[in-house]
Length: 390
Image 1 (cartoon, rainbow, N blue to C red):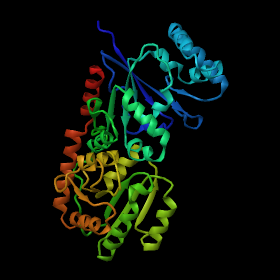
Image 2: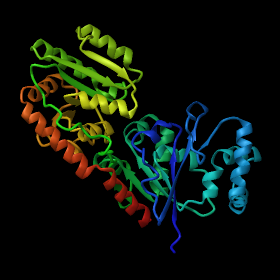
Image 3: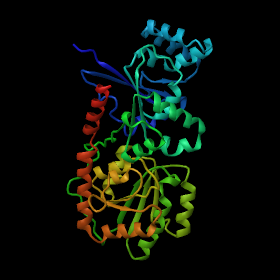
Image 4: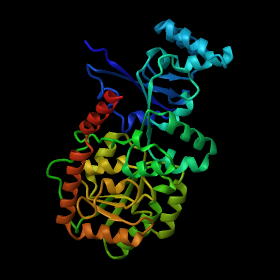
């Protein structure tokens, strides 16, 4: 029987990553040819429901206990590692070992950095068996951080050279990376999947009725790049024109107070609701009760929130930026508008409101897009092919 290839999915210190778009990772990849496990650096504050394979910092008693446990998982590998980390002091070796000794003794054939920025954590480590490295890029690492951090620019160049495969969540991000020097021969696009079984609209959901209140909705963090401030003038314009609309935003973030002041100034505080962060079950309910989904971002790599709205069969108005046009084709399965353009945004929303049959057709086409191009099954197949090919 062929020995299973070992894949280590390495996360950073943001536990939310694991429970969002990677809900079924690593289970969806395990089979008779692959043994896939995840490892994550979790801070004390985010240690809720942490699996046993996870490494994290939680005080010296826990560190010592875990260090001993990792040691006896594979004493030979542990000894090889300790000898080769000769540049480090004993204290430094023990500190690193207490955090990631289980990753080393697992002896993965492939280390998949689910977020490329986790490379900082492993770049100086010695792995006795020289595993292959896959790095996934989601947007911030390519679009923002490399301009704000000279150190990250150095690490990014190093990762481009050292990585065996560079994964990008959209063609747009892939092209951005090639411009920055990513080798084309090792770069690959695999779209994130959306759970089309979980995110599925109720049967016989009513289409828009102009005599009723039209419920608009968005999902995403409250940060400037999400472009919410450009929706508010559009809402005011629609209300002035006699449209009966309300707007709900799911998410939290540092921009809440500023956005709240904007809606107060526009006099639409009763028509805009910030409902905060919600679990996926609540997100699904809110999407199911909505009529139109809005995604006004100024830049995006490949927004999972838009994929969820597609799966929920909602008519979508989104900005024509980043990887969004790889999901939404204007007039085919939704409407695309320029960023920072409240007038065009209002016009597109009104197009759905005043033509319910068109809105319904766009929602149905969006659902088919989620099923045919962005299903978890398709994503899983692409990853299995990649893992087995290295």
